[in-house]
Structure formats: C-alpha cells, structure tokens
Length: 145
Image (tube, rainbow, N blue to C red; front, side):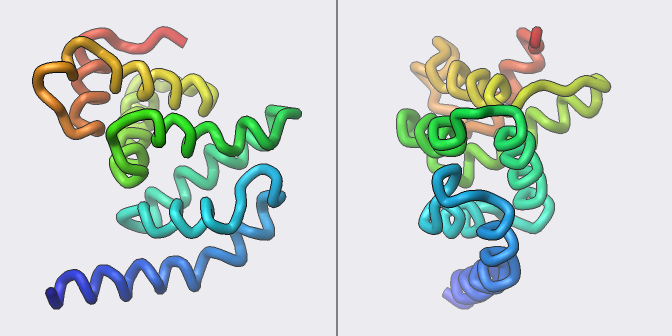
C-alpha cells in the first residue's frame, strides 16, 4: 500500500511537471487533455515519457491529418487487450532495437508493427506481456521498414 501511494505521488509529480509543457507542444485536435494525462500517468519514468513525446512530435510534424494521427496510439491500444503502460514499454523495446541496429522508422509504422504483434499467432495461446512479445517478434522476424 505504501508503494502504491509513492507510485501515485510520483506519477502526480510527473503530471504536474509535464502536463502544461506537453499541452503547449501539441494542438488540442492532435491530442486532448485526457489523453495527455493518460499518457503521462502510464509512463514508468521520465525517459519513457520523453521518448513518446518525441515520437508524437515527429508524427505531428509529418502528417496533415493531425486528428487521426494523434489518436493512433490510443486507438491501437484500445483495440488490443493491452493497457497503455505496456504499449509504452513495447515502444521502448522497439526503439532500443532500432537504436541498436542504427535505424529509424516512422512512429505510425512502429505502432502498426506492435499492433500486428498483438494479433500474431504466437500470442494466441500464450498471452505474453506486450514488451516481451515485441522483443520476441523483433528477435525472430526482425523489422523491414
């Protein structure tokens, strides 16, 4: 119980520290206040939050359809049986893989790969944690993109 209270305090500190900064960085039609709060409170630490915000920034700059693209992470998450926290961890696994390979990809392609991993036959019988599943898929099949 004490750990939960500390965790909630830490998360509320992250929200206090970053909400306004993120709100000013992204238009409302791209990501709304509820999504920002959910994003902040689903990140295990500042490193993960910075990573996702950076990807969202790239997505915002590269697409004219801001409303659709800003909601992509949340829509894919809702379509899967994984919560946003696991999606964020899986994004980090994917980013680490790309960094190790000296590669980069568009955020929407990264999200689509993770979404496909959720639907993979490997995940039908054994329900993996999403970061573990993405690591398994990248290790076994790699990424072409």
